[in-house]
Image (cartoon, rainbow, N blue to C red; front, top):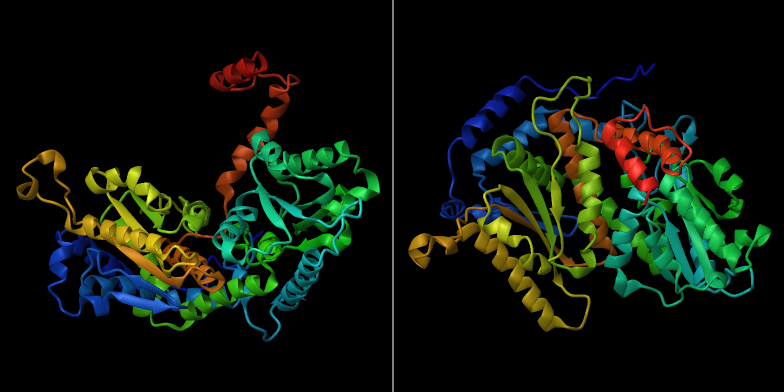
Length: 535
């Protein structure tokens, strides 16, 4: 029986009064362009932290609204909740665990005890083990069964074991080493594994099997098929261990699977999967860019942690980003949120943020188990600019749905085609401007060409897309999710909603393979099973 408190903070009596006041503000229409009549607007609606800048001047937010949004976060217990998170209290009360992903990138300091073990020392040891592994790989000292150096690393994992590492590897392409190429396989769909392996050499390929529990259905099926691929090339028995590594909290299962103990890296219950790229789950990142660059990624995230911990709430990027989302969703009734990075190497960022946001805050009961009374979790979607301008931007500009937009850009390119970057940035800024100003009927004479405008966006800008600023960017969104969970009084660190589908899939598999009875299934599912078996 869980005897932990449901929260380590209290909500003040002022919270409901502030909520009601914000509801009143929301009833008064605002024209964003008119808000710029205030000569101090840019100064008030810009904030900086960990090298990132947030421009939220193109939002339907007045100084009074901003002040009350910040006060709402404080009235919800921001200071105490943040302290509980960062100090390792078990804020994930439904699973009786802390959420110590910030410890993975923390500086050296006093021991942090979790269930009698110094978690800080374990993190340090894991990083040192990663350092030795990556150094051997890049030096050509890591050899396969035939004695040839490993040249390709295939990371097998799904969810948090895939999305965050994939974003970082793609985004940090300028720092890729020449000695190795990292590939990712996540989907149980055989297309993913088959086409990834098709042109690889089994003798020079290493698989990193990433599963916190080492029971993930998709990951283990892909891993077994990878072993078959090696066996078909004559790499069998004890020889296969030279081609395997893993990251898991269940070392016994990894050993039983055949992974060598020296190549098993730890995971911990106090790190959620969607927050785990900073741990050994980030080993594929380090394999592709090297440990010095990986440590820069951690340093950027740490800088954002320190900003979140110390910056005043009205200058605090995660607080501001989180409260803007609350304003849009709970008061202005916006239906979704688009994340549009104007950087092709961040093409998969939205997918990672979808898991981070929607798995964390897609909850329907509060921390006491009572039904929530407001909308929780953002419907988050998007993709890289300028591609989106030729796909979904039409809906954002002229559609009837209310969509808040996050633009992301790097001011300095990491490639030599600077004239391309000029075009890229001009498009990003133009889209934000067009959303705000629109085009009225008197300017077009044609109702089909009217663009309503007054549609909000904010812009997160980086000096350039490097490991440090990427780390800060991802950590910004992690803390933004926590701030919103605080307002909604939900647990951002469990994900019970994904379990039922897994259980039903396990039950359905025998029926699909022709060995199970379908009489207990609902008619629709039973029909689909019979249809599949007859295909």
